Length: 220
Image (cartoon, rainbow, N blue to C red; front, side, top):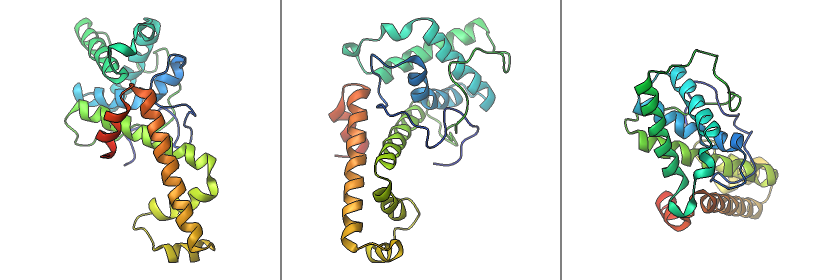
């Protein structure tokens, strides 16, 4: 993923330990941090906003959602949280444009601190696809970060193999890291399985449609 337009929502290693989906006991700040990138991406594309305008409008949307008590209105049995969130987002933006409300730069109340990378929207033309892409990238990023935190030694092997461009051979990786070929194979297998488990856990918590999401996102 390329460097974003701005910095928002937490650094690359500052991921929450809970799943990325909606949970009834999730505090508003945690929830806003989980979904600000998809919301930001949607606003940038759907309303052709500048980076600064999209940042401000994203903050105001979450403030409106939290202060308006909308989180308490969500019912999982009526559908997925992402779809419900996008419905709220469309409603909010329509009201904002209809009423002509604009934020005074730097003067809005803040739901959470702005201190991470915004997603790169680039030439993406479909706000729905941008929302889903940002959501999935955040989901995978948080899954990887949690595994990195739990399995630092094995993750070092995985990182050297899978996250540094062209993958080296197992033999050259073993020689470079000073470990056996068997340790390379075991580390790569276990880290991949841990990441897959984290993703499945996040999907299970997201919208209650685990199998459909798993097949759609991972092709299984």
